[in-house]
Image (cartoon, helix red, strand yellow):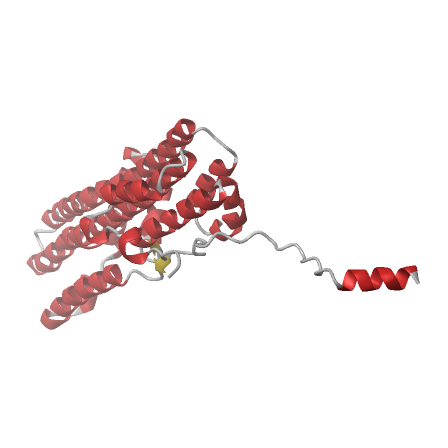
Length: 301
């Protein structure tokens, strides 16, 4: 009977509600802002177009076989690599060629998307505290620098110390890319010089066979091939690659600077609207954002 009365008494009371999990931050950061990737079409199309024009000019006025000379290629390619290596170190040269190949298939981040992602992180940290950013760390592993920056925030590192660490990393990365671009620039200068050296070698050999007039023309043509190889290698291949590495370095530095500004601002618990102004001060005019005026979700909407 006691159990029945207890049961009837409990029927008159509202059932206890189960505990609800805490609400997630209203604006969770996107998993990735990688908008462009794959082959660099502009570089490949440009190199292919330049090579096609040269090839058409060669085949229109003669035979392609006449422009093939292994000793001339050896002088230009081997000499360019040797002199460039002598100007730097083996490690710098290896990294430069690696970066030169990477710019053809590199993936770039849109600075505008990066700025939006930083502002979403700042909003989430302001509403639920910086510790809540631990929940999004797995989603940021695709961007090691951002992942490291957010990790420093969640660990409570002082903002000034964090700023020095991240800024130093940005400068170190920019210096490494700058050395790679310098290697390629140096190689683009050496290649025409090696072509000229090969031409002089061919001319000396030609002058040694002046007793045979029929051999003068072919020998002169072969001597000039090294100049041709050096000019093509330096101006059509190496110089554009150096410019591409420099541009990739600038894009990488911009993205990391945006992440650094955002991380330091979040660590200082600044207003996200102020962060937006700081980001726009770094972004190019065509990439500036108006997140809170146009894109941010309105409360009660």
